Image (cartoon, rainbow, N blue to C red; front, side, top):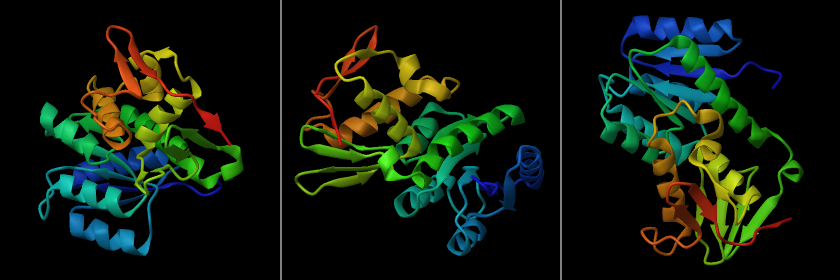
Length: 233
């Protein structure tokens, strides 16, 4: 990218906003800080950022509601940065479409590394679709360049950046057992349940019965296997 990625930092603690913005700007990101969800939504209507870093404890709305709004309406990367460290909050955040969840207190250098990882994935959308061909498997078609997953029945889903990466790894190695570590790829620092949450989201989209999956099967003690033939075009 020729221009600096724009990052919105949304946290009701001004000192946290300042810390995060200063650290990101050291690594060639543009930043804007907001202390309420409403301020951030108004700014997003005027200019889309590449990624939002969102605290869950906002004064005017639940941060999870903001995460869901962004994933439903816009293709924006999302990192949750929160002092709410319970597993249900982490799982729900990922289920709503967040790309990552970082607990407070946090290491600013780790946050920057996570931001860079997500931005790299999102940059795929700016490349030519010819560079990233379409994959077909069963009744499904997946376009990596747009993160769009659709089937012959007319169902269509847009995957998050993290879901896109996992599905692409599976599609590039069908009928091979892939370890959890390989599927997590650059997100190996993510908490252990993140791969389970993202795999569950994928299965709910492509499996007839996500509780008894036939396309993405679990190989206990080894990882996962994608069972269908994949055609690229």
